[in-house]
Image (cartoon, rainbow, N blue to C red; front, side, top):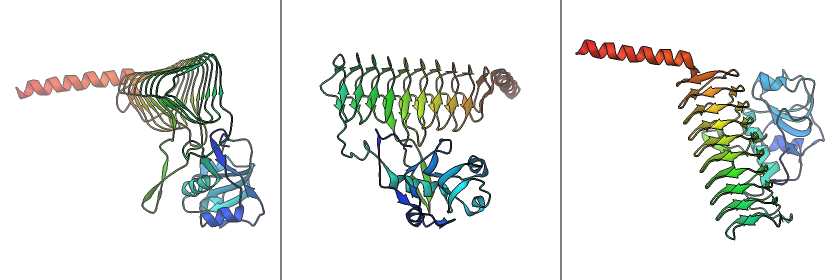
Length: 337
């Protein structure tokens, strides 16, 4: 369920209202209400709407009770869960539409709130900083000039935030060091096609940054779509890094400059990434993996391995191929002369 510190929940929708708003078929009549959107892995789905686009996601509802699931007619016939099905052509589009009806971002929509802002007396906040309603700032925090701290943000004790940074939809741990120009908690890059138009999917998650993390200048960390984007304890992130929505980075990782991580990646503990590493979405990177500079990953990497190249592969394999290509180039050059 979206965090009420960052998102306002609208009035519930009846199942019939939900079906009508997205022109969906309704598997059964019911007087139930939908109060919120949810991810499939949440524990309680009984008053929520979820969506399933394939058999793998549908399988997660097996023997479970849920409120409403938006899915295709073909998949609806295979559902083994207990709940109401809304049959549509595009489940993700239907879900995005209903999410926009049920939830609004307090920060993005500039919605009025009256929650008290708490600032510890031992913290320093430059006079040019803008602080939203409901912010909670711990002891010893230092916030430099021209920063913006959005509604509901929590900043742990001892954190340092340099000039020009923007933080929204985020929970920041203790002793976190954020360098100049960082952007945390902006809407993730989530869209769905609708009859030739590209429609934004509401981004209703948060960014959670654990203790002792450092984030380099001009780095951006998008908030999750439904689940959180998480940066593990002690991780160090260089300048100009992009971290996509729903990504989960483990503890004590090091990410060098200009690394780009697409959405929904899961990265283990102690991972090292050289400069300009790029990850496709939904990848799993095991504990202790090392990725050479400019590696371009399009598949999962098992724990403890070293990979390089684009497309990336085990580093010994990549180095052998590089040597062979170099020799071939020299041989061809010699023949031409």
